[in-house]
Amino acid sequence: MPDLYYVPGSAPCRAVLLAAKALNVNLNLKLVDLHHGEQLKPEYLKLNPQHTVPTLVDDGLSLWESRAIITYLANKYGKGSTLYPEEPRARALVDQRLYFDIGTLYQRFADYFYPQLFGGAPADQGKLQKIEEALKFLDTFLEGQKYVAGPNLTLADLSLIATVSSFEVTDVDFKKYSNVKRWYETVKSTAPGYQEANEKGLEAFKGLVNSMMKK
Ligand SMILES: N[C@@H](CCC(=O)N[C@@H](CS)C(=O)NCC(=O)O)C(=O)O
Image (cartoon, rainbow, N blue to C red):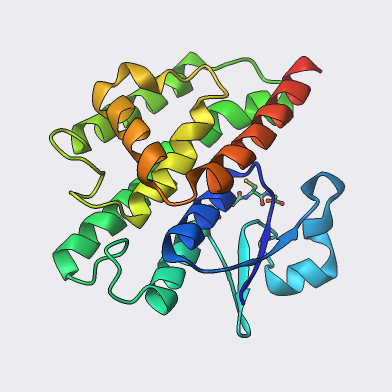
């Protein structure tokens, strides 16, 4: 069984937990105490010199970057699954949405929110505008589509829902985008094991935000 080094509140970790549930892959969960710098210890750096969670260790392979992990899990354990379709055009759309998530939506969220959360910085309206722009793109992708890459739930939905659900805990109002709002409810009710894989960790993220923003 693969080991997953993780923290429950982290959006990239929640994306992996969602994908594992949907693919029916059991993971041996190993908590990493980021707060006390466990990710900087030599044992962890040997697995992942970039010292991030999530990190997956499977059969001697050590892999990080959540989207690389979830596509690996689908390739290895989900042959034929519609979560990561093999037909090149369908797969290309899923990949495009995954890259949109890491490079645009999640990145802009991190640029806006993490300086406030971890550095006590004031909210930067320009950075919030960049998230709004990304949400408009997402809303456009979802026009007339049930899921972000077509009629089926895919890895792209699972990665993006981990990002978008984090906005719940912040002042980013994604529900004003009607397609995003509808898609959010659809994925919440159709992603296998959503409650366990995402909601629990989201509560942990909420706890972290409440404790850090009070300081
Ligand atoms: N792009 C990476 C982001 C990973 C990441 O930044 N993880 C954070 C937690 S959410 C982390 O491990 N921070 C600790 C560190 O960088 O030392 C992914 O999707 O896996």
